Length: 90
Image 1: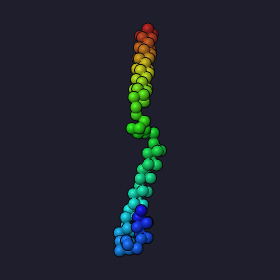
Image 2 (image 1 turned 45 degrees about the vertical axis):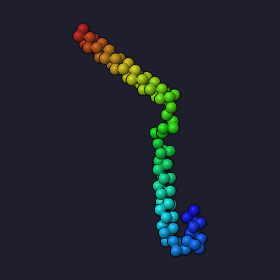
Image 3 (image 1 turned 30 degrees about the vertical axis):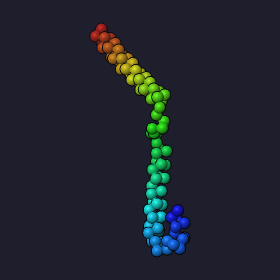
Image 4 (image 1 turned 60 degrees about the vertical axis):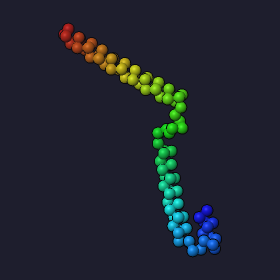
């Protein structure tokens, strides 16, 4: 639109203002493109990916991770107890 206005003779007295606006618009466009690119290259999923199904899946995954970590901790405690008991017999 700014390019079109710049070419119209009726807006000849506003050429510098139009040119400044074009420059600002191009700068904002480059910044937005860079921001969008950085978002596309992250592992972060946005709001549009969050629905009840994905929330339940994420919660189930978190719960599984906590359960496995608890199992690992219990196993390490049992091994430590067994080693301690074995040392007491020697």
